[in-house]
Length: 413
Ligand code: G
Ligand code: MN
Image (cartoon, rainbow, N blue to C red; front, side):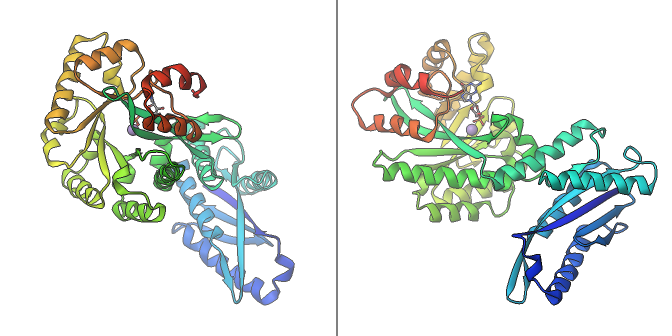
């Protein structure tokens, strides 16, 4: 049993001007919307004024509450058309769950109400009565809400890391890397939030934002007069499974007017293995747009070798875990050797990622791997610093040397 109180407020506060007729209309639409968010067996009650109570006799875990919570938020926040007036609402939710937050319905109602007031005061989307619930699940729910807010508040940011061609000494491509710049936590690396974003499907809008931003930035560099360079962006397997992926990419390319061949999508080897036929068709359709495809996080551990020849690829990225074992493990060196040979045999651009030491550079060079990416060359940089790097592509000087001299000190962690 759980009780959720939902308090709604107008944005901006125009309640007084709405009039009785339109207020009634609003309440009736709102009631319908809230009813469509709940499951059979749940009840919505118009409690008082701008407050609704949601009674959920059966809840199997916090995930279910999170889902309903999310549905309500999305549903309420869609604008309401009342004749010639459009109204937007926002909502705060307070939640109390039996038995930990109250042994009878009155206590639960009171506690849900307290939680609601707290949520409302702090303009939070929701608040549980107390935090004695499974703390991990709570963190997950918090994270989901924070991620949604991060999208809304534009807290995501791209950093850029060069892929250096050791033959020419120049930047061959730039990988766009997602970071979350949280006002309190600082720069959050993707490891800390991608899993949650994938589980909640939020990775789809976040990933789309990243691709659009990367394309826009790449176009902007060209417009600054910098030599055209390819930008690479990772696709999560959840994004790769979206059936409208190809049309989304086409839309972004049209919108940003970026030449398709200047975009490379990195898809991890594992996500290509989910459904071989689907992967093949999707990759072919993406190639049809003119974009490049990289197979990311490539190691020997996948049965993907069997399918590799059927996928239309341009680039093979040697996984950083393998790169980081090269110096200690002759067997991993042998594997890297084989993978680099395989890439070359398929006429792919082979890029070793996560290169951190001179020793790794030398070992990879000996294996005839000519393109590398990693902290040894440059940490991920801000867009403005990346401009400097790209400008070196036009000059006589060797990017490699310049990176060592200047950019490494300026770059971020
Ligand atoms: O596998 P994928 O391309 O998604 O990995 C990209 C991640 O690796 C980014 O978060 C990036 O910051 C990180 N990264 C980039 N260079 C290095 C490196 O030299 N060492 C390590 N450990 N991580 C790196
Ligand atoms: Mn990548």
